View 1 (spheres, helix red, strand yellow):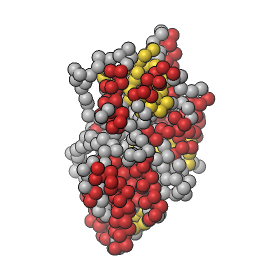
View 2 (cartoon, helix red, strand yellow):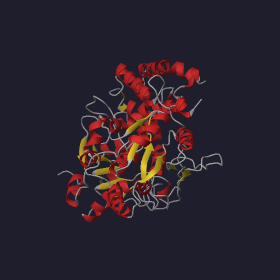
View 3 (cartoon, rainbow, N blue to C red):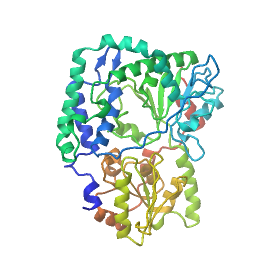
View 4 (tube, rainbow, N blue to C red):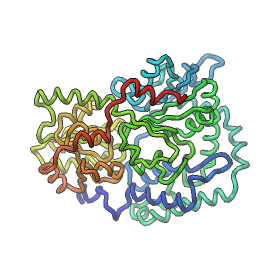
Length: 482
């Protein structure tokens, strides 16, 4: 059986798109978005984690390697673990957990620089292994500390609010999802009684953990006097809830592709969703147009990130040197949930097109791989620190599933192909607008190589990536509303 038959998504097989539809139906049946247990809305805490767990169990997504553990640090007597570097500020910034080769976060650095330039240096909260020893308060350590400090109080708060009807409601949701995927689960040898993993049984522990962490973050931001929190990849619901309870506005700066099936951000038809960012800073109008955000979320377009602006400037130099988009060069950006799937497809593709050069780059969250001797000679692995924008600028073709790199490749003028593996609907808009070609099989890939054209016009590119905001425009977008 070939890679394309095994892995390319069809309407008849279970995919992340079909799983999203199942969750949407369960959500509507049980009115889960507005379901409250005591003072806690459970569904925003569960939805994405449960969906990812089931997607991995059922082979829709390949398992993602776990994040590196963050150890506790030794602190001076009297200090709370994780609070080294704490200081009062009207603004706080939580950077993206992954950094570039210089251990910087380009998705939040521009905000920090703007705040400093206006005399209001923010408190930057450490997140991930790159911030260990940075002198910043560390998010993971604080999460643990808040559970240790306020866990007993949280149990006392949660226990009286739990009713048999709550557990019955949750079990009905799980039963509906299980029944909807049962045939597929059985066909691949997964016990339907185990679907959902840690989230299959009613998650009392999650309510307690959330209540404790929300209390901790509320006190943290109150003590800091914080009025606005910028959080890249805002999926830490307790932090968001605690900040909002402390009276702060929570803003999510974009860091990657957004779609109408985004499990954290997309809530079709909902006027308001608990523990959701209050504002979204967009690269272009496209992202908010497709995302189906809750009605109360304020959208602000701040333009393309500095990475793209710099890459476009370098592209001119490459073009002058005859190095831009060299013929028969193919760059492939991996996807953390489909890495082996992509590799299998590429091995077949490289063998079928020996006069093309294929360069594959892994996602930072993937376990490193090494190509063996059986790999075609025209398929090569890019180093982890190789500049992705440089590779896309030099390549005639760029392939991927639903990585943000495909939108970036459009901006850089490459010919863009979307591999129709499960999840490609995250960037359906790129295909529907005619700015990328959907590739269902090896035959489609061959046609793509011989008949595709560069992505789209400058005006269409601006829909994805608007011109960068000026310093004054950026400050107006991020400062505390008066």
